[in-house]
Image (tube, rainbow, N blue to C red; front, side, top):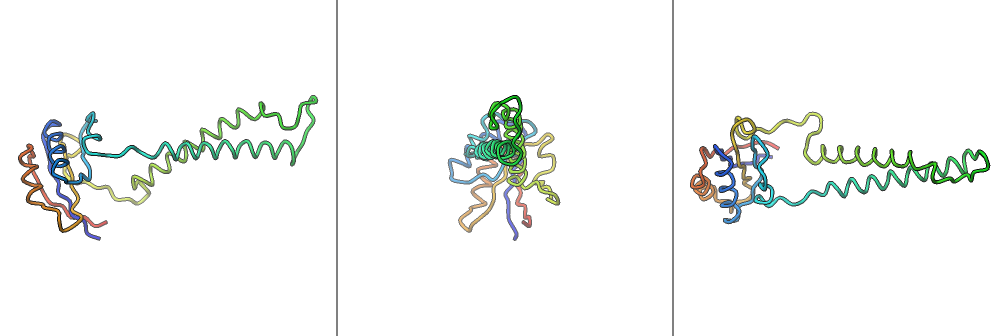
Length: 174
């Protein structure tokens, strides 16, 4: 599937911020922005939603906690009951260290795996480079052309008025 992108490059973050605001005011959806260093508040200007990754971490941690407690209870009470000094077989306090470790481990592994899958960083993935030097010394703003109502001429005019150094159309296969 062939996708078209409109890529604008800028010399400084102020011009990039201005372009992002102009694009959002005129109804254009921003695909991504590339900067050589973190630009505070750029996500909010672009309209990026909050990540749902914490929900995945919490769910995986809860499953790790339930799994660890369940397995230890099963092993201590049903599978291999031992009478050690008259303690009850289901001594929950003895289960706390392993439960904590498995909760953290499962949450961490699930978070890392979800991040890699969601970002498309699986083995064999091809890197996308929209503009040369986009993360070294150049700021880039990328708009994706999805439908026939996308007005590339209007977008180009707004980007150039915002201080874009260069505006190009790039085609990539998905």
